[in-house]
Image 1 (cartoon, helix red, strand yellow):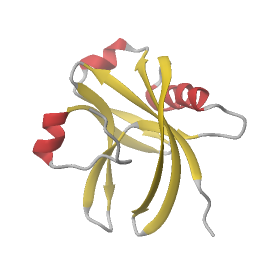
Image 2: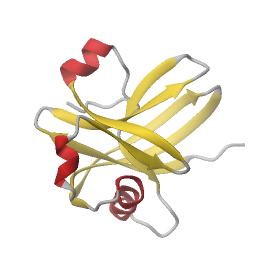
Image 3: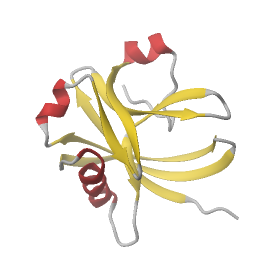
Length: 137
C-alpha cells in the first residue's frame, strides 16, 4: 500500500506570469508544469516547508507566504499511482534577480530542473497541463 504524501507548493507572480517547473512523464509522453515546493516533513507547517524548499531549490527565502487552498491530487506519473494532499501558498522570492530571468535551472533533490515564468497565454499556446489542477490565473 502506498502512502498519501503531504506537500506544500508556492504560487509566485511576476506581472501576468507565474513561476512553474517543467516536468516530463516518460510513460504518458507528456510535458507538464508544476509550482515549486515539496514534501512537508514531520513537525513542519506548510509555510515552513515553503521557506525550506525555496532555500534548497532556488537558494533564497520566500517572503509574504500566505495560505491559499488545499488540493487533493490523485494521479499517475511515470506509470505509478500517486496521491497527494497539497497545501497551496502564494508568496514572493527574496532574490529579485530571479524575476528578471525568463527561465533558470534549480536543484530538485539530486537533479537539476528547469523553472520559468509562464503567462496564461503561454500555457494555452504550448497546450501544456499544470499539475495539480487548480485555477492558477
